[in-house]
Length: 370
Image 1 (tube, rainbow, N blue to C red):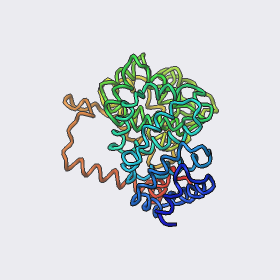
Image 2 (image 1 turned 30 degrees about the horizontal axis):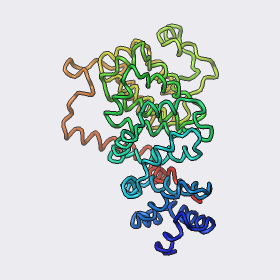
Image 3 (image 1 turned 90 degrees about the vertical axis):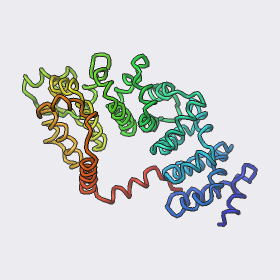
Image 4 (image 1 turned 60 degrees about the vertical axis):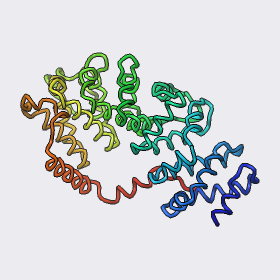
């Protein structure tokens, strides 16, 4: 089908049956690389699809949103979506409607668009222009049944992606907002790995700000038990080891299970490692007896990339304190040559652990086929 002909069918005035066939065709097209190339070279198609997200036909509107999901999974189409198709104002308006039936699709599009920093900055700017605050997004995320027609699980990855921006992290970490405290229970939210992953991604990003570590580990937030519980299993610890743990980690039952998703387990470990960047953080994790939990976790874990993350944390927990001038590990200046060697070593380790095929699969995440 010629692009010019296809465009003539993607108008609000077109007969519903013809319009439905056109959106169905385009949905199939958007599910593969060749089709995405067509969208990239013919941005008017995405402009037309965006206008059909409010079509009276539920089927046509649904197909249109799914086309946007597929398109937003391709970074090269982000600028077309946010600039030429101007999708953001409509998406942000509708996501706040507790009766809007396509809010989950909107969350997925926004999550895709914010994966990469340039478009994430644009989304944050439009959020501000539309007067949609991070606090409002958190309210929606944490309010059970906010939208009875949508789960809003993908608000988790959206918050995680937005938290790569320093200004957003500052808002999340403002003590009087209690955002972190509201998010923590979702680290153990069994119904959705997407939601759990979004929350731990948000916390991990926030932990790059070492000035907040004492607050996060202190009584006001007490983040440590929330991070450790998904990593703890049913193994029997000695009485001395149990007594040194946070109360929620003591004498766990025989049927205690660990986080099932290896990527989430790795992010939990990375967050704990970030919290050891400061001397006070290291002292807190040692005082709270984190090592026995990690020891048993290391024996249980099967995934190589997660084991590697665990070993990095254990090295800090059992190692000597760094020299006085190097007490804050996030402030240590690493020579460029060494940094490059370490980066290449990490990349090689990642390839060896997960294989090249995983990268190919990730490209297709979020694709929806007709």
